[in-house]
Length: 316
Image (spheres, rainbow, N blue to C red):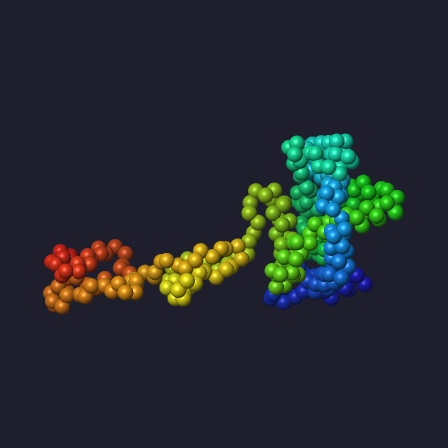
């Protein structure tokens, strides 16, 4: 029955994303997760933020971050990163002993940086392919490989081995606190993304590829049209109303009105001097309007008083 649902959810057609063959099924789960987040998780997170002081929220964040460093230690060790594994282990020891069980982050100011890892990345380092993109109920964006890694990460979480009541309470506290920390990011997502599903999917896959590259290379960015030839590039210089600056695009600041003019034009009110009417002079000095061909010697402009500069121009 599960296989039938997966086959029914396979996306086909020329516009299908090769990394997301289960897109119809994933979109259905994504929509359900989004509604649950909108009507349950977000109101709870906002209420939690309203009644919980910032120092308390920071202490809770530090507590669960300290527990996460246990899994970071194991995964860094499995990936062959001895120094990162040792620093993660020292973070756990220092924060647990001197940071009141992890409520205070002592290790970061001491120079022991966090090295976040998970078993999905460990499998990727070992050569396992990510498989198709997958949206998990409640947990959100993932993949076949990362979904299997998530199950292993639960086994590295110490709260898994506590009593069910304690485990469920800690899981709920971690979920609400984490959702509270992400309130600003999700608000920005709702305002910026035209298609939230595609935006989240592409951002997730891009981020996972980047982390597998150890940050040594830039993440693959969307390919935009490159105007290599200036003749085909759309130009708006000289056509803007006075005082109008460039459009406010994302990530760019308005620099005010453009001060440059298109090649071959002159500022208004500064007309070029009148060309001489002598036939011989006209033949000796061709017009200088427009862009000159590469390799040709530019003809000197006649002076304003009509002096004999035209005679010095090289003949064709």
